[in-house]
Image (cartoon, rainbow, N blue to C red; front, side):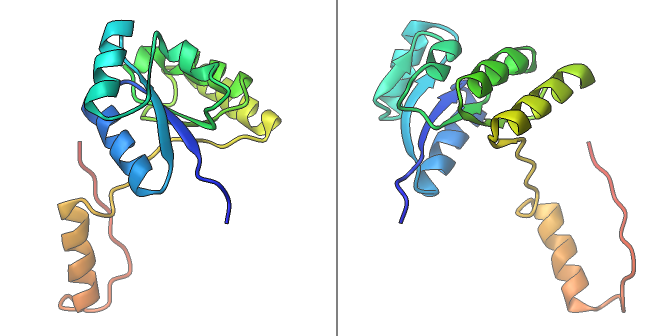
Length: 154
């Protein structure tokens, strides 16, 4: 069995805390978090029982103990942090959107491929109540055989 991945989460708001929880449930070791200031990072680390509170997100990308960087910051910071993480040899899980321009997204995608790293954006809806209801309706066959379903939401 391989060793657990060491994770740092950048961004300690609601979704950052979700990433910390999910990483732990998946068996990863959360070694540090970074918030908007060093003081907030230390406070967030203490509140989530995480060993390190980094002075900045970029500091987290330089930590040799980290295998994976989770980016949960405001969109405008995604490119800078993801690029630094990939350059440092870290895998990246970046909240939507990956970048704020197509050019930046392509740059990050190419860098991840070149370095042989995982760069991904989570987009999981299978447990959303609407999706669960749709699945139940399809499986019940109450509407006959379904060939196509199309939907959208904001």
